[in-house]
Image 1 (cartoon, protein in one colour):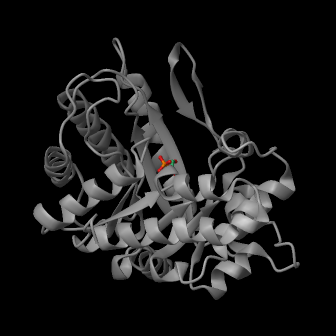
Image 2 (image 1 turned 90 degrees about the horizontal axis):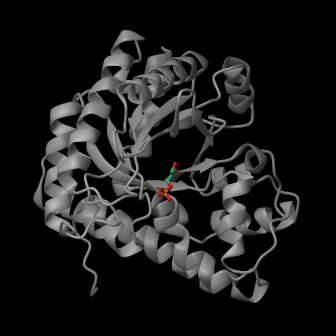
Length: 336
Ligand code: 13P
């Protein structure tokens, strides 16, 4: 019974060429984003910005769900309407980040382990009461000299599976996000090797902990050159090698794969997704997006914290959302 509900949510998240808006930046991370436009990191400013996002006209045509941070799921708009009900009225499913961040991995200080399992069942119950239908947990895998270690990949995979099982028991569809960072000068081969090991380890743990694959979403990185690598793979190579790697590692029972943007430019993130769907299908799962920076960058720049710029900022957001929705269909055309 509960599996039907989990699977229904997962399928709705990837239906109709829609994707997710990741707006779950912690207060620290959103502070860094606001700093780039000279806006002070105050609760009202964070609220104004998120209200702008969720009130964007027609956003629900391209965005199926939004990932929220703990503060945001409890917040109300300036007129008193809860942000959750604004999203629901627009046909957008509320989701919630439930991890409490990536901390230094004991014994391997250059690597990270994501925390947040303690007390998670009670928090899941509370978030369901606040209107959430899905959850997110992000594990971070860093490529560098002699890393990642098997220890880092294994402990993170174990925690991801524990989180996913707890969410499924509580009625939230888990987004399982093992992010292999693009930071570094490694080449695309190294990214593929680490992504393959990470995904295989994650699915092994999901199986060991009896997570229902039909009732989850995978949110991986793309197979891509490190951001400081001298030789950058082109769009078709990234798209082709990403789909090939995922086909080798991700069971067909998973309804959808929704990529993170991970520091790619808005245009690159759209072009890569588009090429996957246009040239490298058919795939056993829907290939969609769950972008944070690649949906919000130009929106944030257009807003600058000024009420007079809200329309321009919303236009910038809808333009990226529409472009990524077209990329889900493989019909994105930059010139159009
Ligand atoms: P980016 O698309 O900016 O990587 O953010 C997505 C996300 O939710 C990371 O956890």
